[in-house]
Image 1 (tube, rainbow, N blue to C red):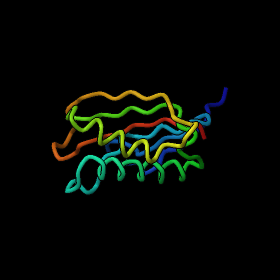
Image 2 (spheres, helix red, strand yellow):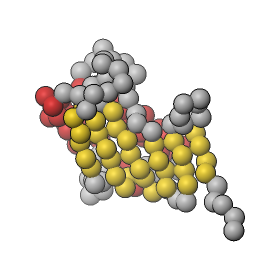
Image 3 (cartoon, one colour):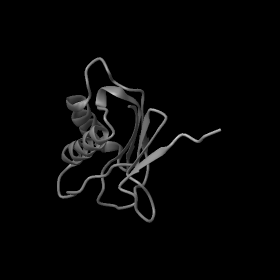
Image 4 (cartoon, one colour):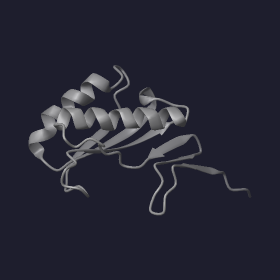
Length: 118
């Protein structure tokens, strides 16, 4: 039996930004680069990063199978949803969970993990 290949993107010592296996792209949690902006701006940055990674895998946001969103502050839920709803593909909204959780850096207001069909 042969093993199917796993393609990894932006491989680091601790993690890869994305792995593609058997027609599915698994993204690492994406976080904002510019933390000087509020929740809508940080969410928009994260969603743009997701778009770029999905494009590198040959897919896009209309093929997201599920999304997991992590917010440290419940008060940011509405602002995150505003940015999400402006971005998500109408008619292709994926299953989603939003969790209130501490993030690795206190200046991050959002982290998003997605899995998508390629």
